[in-house]
Length: 418
Image 1 (cartoon, rainbow, N blue to C red):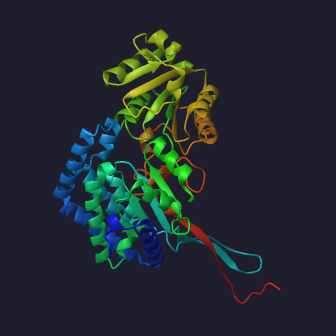
Image 2 (image 1 turned 120 degrees about the vertical axis):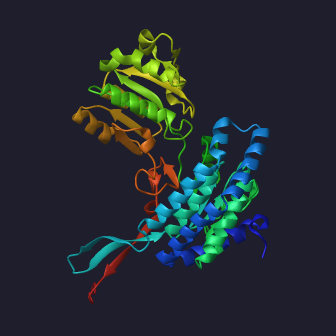
Image 3 (image 1 turned 90 degrees about the horizontal axis):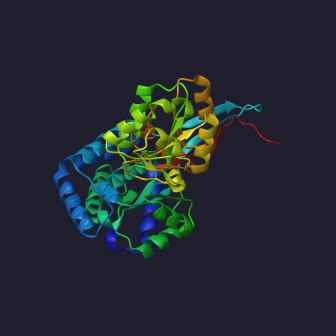
């Protein structure tokens, strides 16, 4: 049998389909055994993984990779330890496969409900991010799906080693090694996979807007999309100044290059008096500030913001600031310029908070909390396979349940229709 990196696309997808059939029936104990074994293998092979990642990074730097992408390519000891912890958490999570919800008694005496079942075969396409090879495989496996992990060429060495570790873990649990495939694929191979709707059920791209647009345009398979993270924070009336400052700083500084980092701060006109304090704190923390005219009236040292700034996902230590006349204007700004990803209101006004939650149409909406909490681990999912800004079939951070669908199950006692 040919190794994965030399196989044509049809065997890869076909073997994933066969593996999905076996995984759909696999006991939870076997899936958890695989996840725990992989956690152990990551620990045992930590030095080799770090060395492979360093080689990938050295090549990427020579090739002139962007700094933001280079940061995502990093797979150091802290990130490996984070994946080990995530694997252990996912192993402890309830298995969604076979769960029956909404079981009700109908008028004719039948018991009817919905049983969670796997989607089937998932194709994951992503740039850099070797940690996705671990996360995506773990979520697919626990939810009973087979997955093909197509990482970027910049992470080829590290991903190849991770693919070998997945094979060992699957074999130790008596599960098909094709359940998690990490093949080296050309652009032509990927195009062929995107045109294989009989063998692949869902495509999840993770990366820049161009990658996601290209995948969505070429795929004949349903695609879960996440184009941009233009996330907004509205500092509303009655906001606690100290709380607001901490949230604004955390939402940018913790991880500036992630999709749920905030990009714009909208300041209610009632809060204008502390604009100098806010802008000074941002600048002191190394954040470039771009402001509207009203911001610059009180903080003339900041750069002027232009129309494009309100639509820009900086993925960097840059904030655009704007004064708005109230809640209505803030929500209109978010509807006009936001990307439907993650938006926050900071306020002690309960009615404003409730209205913001109800009317802001984003995948994650928060009150008095950092945008960093748009995160699968924070929401009890262990991690996430991705964050969807789509409406169908999943929205926001995607965990185990989002990788399943359902079938209707009916339990009768001899009832006939006629």
